[in-house]
Length: 105
Length: 167
Image (cartoon, rainbow over all chains, first blue to last red):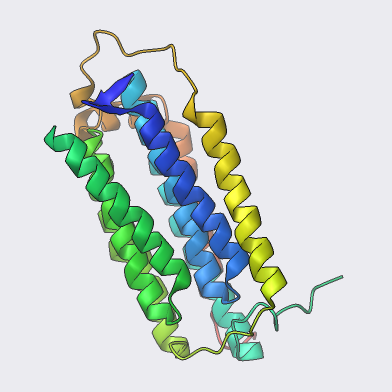
């Protein structure tokens, strides 16, 4: 079905998948913990985009409420995660995950 | 017709600045590219009649979260960070596995047909503040209150973690 003239739900799903895969790729590709963290944000946003597209398709507000809550969780997660990164940097003087492997079993 | 061009423009901006975010060496450039991606996604929200979410997205992500990232990068002075070099095999495996994930998901979703349609519903108003507020404070009131507790916990946790002394 067409959400906008000429643009179907599948277009939005594929855009969402591409952004999600780019986020996954970034987490595997980079070794800087801050960049990996930003890739997690990108993946959250990809899912948000799919939810908003579905919300438009069904004509229901519920999907957008879910996006709202995901934003809330993302904001809380960033605050705590960056605090953890600050602690790591203070103790280890790096954010490189090749060095931060001391909990490896 | 115009909406179609806007869709493709925003899509290319989002995808290419996401690629730039991943590939740029300097973390500050990564943050700036991700902000561009977020603005493109906010544009998609406006295109999908989610006006409130588009505004909140710009305020929360571009305005708060990315500024926090930028602040941490500048405070830790990470902009000339040396990353350990990775071998060719590990890079190739990363690209292949990321590509396979994308291909599988696209193949699964490309031909997917969605029977359900919003017939006869005016979808142009669902993203307005009025609608969002009605649904949020009627059906999702308890999750909303729980989110405030989550925020309180995150705030206390962040302050506790970044405190200097453990006294």
